[in-house]
Structure formats: structure tokens, C-alpha cells
Length: 541
Image (tube, rainbow, N blue to C red):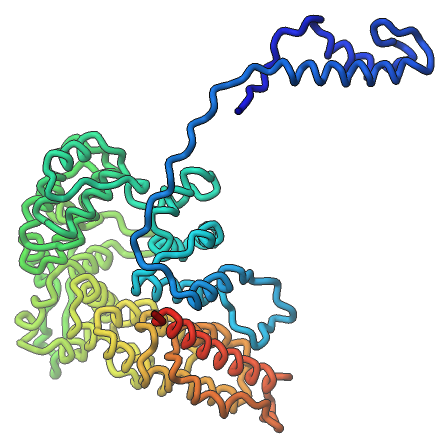
């Protein structure tokens, strides 16, 4: 039975305080009650303190026992195979330590394999052993990138534990609606009630769930309270319309263009520009067409640009931000926004029926090429236009390997994201074959895992070439770490010939480079075989 910490009224009021005062002053200056000065005074003080302690503890009033927590919910998913459960315990027990001398050795980094293991376990639909849930929540607490997969795998019992331990409250914040059960999407009455009275997180979860199933119903639900929502809430709710965005959303988004919040207006304009058939897209097309044309005064075809001279109220209403960032000219700033929001289908009729690849190849007068092509890059990503992305990327073997529009690796990576996984991997493999790995890290990050065979071979070959050339080995540690997580495990056999330390190192090679490369390839090979074993364990009955 639980007890409170408040004692009953003591028979001798202030007795304990008196004893404390005596102890502080010393028994030679003040003696305990009923005792005179002398050698017995300290013993009498301790005896009195012991008696008073027992009396105070015995005098505590019983309190009402706290309610027991509800039983943990059942998890209906099948349990992990025993071998996979043991593997999970090993992955969770691994903790990265301080490395010595910048070298990692040949042992795989188990914590870096945990995200991949969780993704595979979730794909199989397994439930975790209950005893690993605390360690799993601790791992997710320390790494935000783990949380979505870890909480999906942990299931309903993770939320039950999170309500009992403040250290795991992140699980409630990371779960839409704080883990609250959503009403059945056919239960109109419950949906309306939760939308009207629910917490913000519950309403976001409800709108997202409804949007993924019935986009029109989610939009209509949002419209019922739109006028009374706070600006920051309107922005979050509006962003949920990205899922299932379709022409039927246009009237609602057009209305949002007049919203009081600039951020809401900008988001509505962005969503409308992603609908090539929308009225806003047509308005932006007319404005952009007025700025771009074929210059027929030259001997060879070229693109002429005349940027807008003002940002009128209509442009601002359609999402054009009037104030340019520091260091940007106003006209080029407005021009880029117009071209970015115009449907890419605008340009072939406007520029003589040319294909995207032919349009991108045209010279652009008066140094406007960088601004125009960068805006086309953003439009291709926003509109998910693979044909324009291919034109702007160019051939992977071309100088700069990005085409005239992709002026940075970040833009190339975004353009690659519009292509299917096989084409993306093929392009990056060609880039690596032509240019090596020095600039490929960001591009490799957008490729599907495990890497397709041509891409995996290109990475291994490029690493081998770098080793044979005596390159500074630590420059490739990032790519090597990425290969450990992304290379297809079937490639492990191709690494066997790379595991030995070379007898002779190339002239001008970094000191100890041969040993480091052998160590890295050994770790890569071991990690690939471990990943293969992990996959097999999850397939076991």
C-alpha cells in the first residue's frame, strides 16, 4: 500500500527540529531533553533521533493506492523467427565507441544496419519480442532517423510503454494523434466530432488518413472549419492536400490564394502550379511566355529573355514573392518564379515545336541561361516531369555531367528523383564511370537500395581504381560507408580479390593507404555477408 510523506501531528511539537538544532550546535553547548552535559549526551542524542525517526515513520497516514496501469495491448502480428530475434538483440546492444586514429577496423557497424533491418522486418509484418522494446525505444530516442521504422515495428505496446516512462514520450509525439485510435473512416458522425473537438495532432492524423482514402471527403471536411482555423494550422492542413492532389482541389486552392497568411497563399500557389491544367498555371504560363521567346534577329536560333519590370498585385496573389532575397536582382527573382510555376508543356509550342532536349540546347542571350535553366529544373521537380529532367541532366559522361540546367549536385539529385529507379541507377553509374566518386556521394543517396547491379559494379570499380592510384583513402570513407548499407549483398564475392594488402604501394601514395583500403574492403565484404544473413533470418519460418 502506498503512503504519503506527511506525518501526523507529533506529540511533542517541534521535537525533531529541536534534535536537529542540538546536533548542529553540539551537545557541549546544548544537551538533549532529559540529559545533562557529559559523555552520555551524544549517545542520548542519537537514541532520541532514532526513536523520533521510528515515530515519524510509523505516523504516516495510509494513502489510496494508485490505479494499476491497463494491460498492454495485444499485438496480433506474427512473432519474429528466433534467429531474427537474436540478431535484433545484437543490433540493439551495439553502441558506437570512440574510434582510435580515425580507423574503424574490419568489424561491421551494427547500429548502421539497424534501419535496414527494421525496414525488412516491417515489410514482413513481424512483431518484436516484448523484452526488446525498452532497448528499441532507447535507440529511437537517440536517433530521430530511426523513429518512424522503429515505432512501426514496436507497434501498440510502444505507445503503452511511452505513457509510463517520460523518457519515451517522443513516441506519443511522433505518432499521429499521440497514438489515439482514429474512428472508422465510414463513421461520419465520429469523424465530424473528432474534427470539431479533437486535439491538433488527432485532427492532422484524421485529415491525413481520410485524404489517403477519400481525397474529396478530406477536402470537404477541411472546408467546414477553414475560416476559423489559426494560420499555422491552416498551413499544416493545406499541406496534407499534396496527397492525392487532383483538379477537383482547384476551387478550394484558388480560395486559399486570398488567405490572410502569406505562407498559406504561397503553399496554395505551389499546389496549383503542380496542376498543369489549373487556372493559376494558365495565368503563370501567359506571364512566362511574355518573358521568353525565340530571338529571330540572330543568324542561329537563340532564346531571348525579357524579365518583368514590376510585380503587380495579380502576380503577388498567384504566389510570386515581391521582395527579392539579399544579393538577388528583383527582375531575375520575379522571372524565376514565373518560369518555375508555368507548366512545362508551355515551352514546346512557344519555342517552335522543339523537344525539351532541343530547347535546353538552345543558347540564351544576355547571360540569362543560368536563371532560365535553374527555373526549369525547379519546375521539372515540382511537376515530376521525367522528360524535362532528362534534358536538363544531359548525358552523365558530359563535362560537368549535369547539363546546362543542373548547376549543383543538389539540383541533379532532385532531377534524378523524378526518374524511375532503374534509370536513376543507370545514370549515376554512368556518372561514376566517367567522373569517379569525388562528386557522386549526393547522387548515390537518391538511388534505390539495394543498388542495381550496374551501379554497384561502378562503385566497386571506382573504389578499386582509387586504391590502385594511391588516392588518399579517408576521402572515400563516406562512399564506403554508403556502400556497406546500399550495395547488393550478392556483390560480396567480387570483393574477395580486393582484401589483400598490396606488396608495393604506388609512388606518392598516402602512408599506410594500402592497409587502410584492405581493411575497408574487408569490412565491406563482412557487412554484405551479414546483411545477406539478416535477410535470410527474416525469411525463416
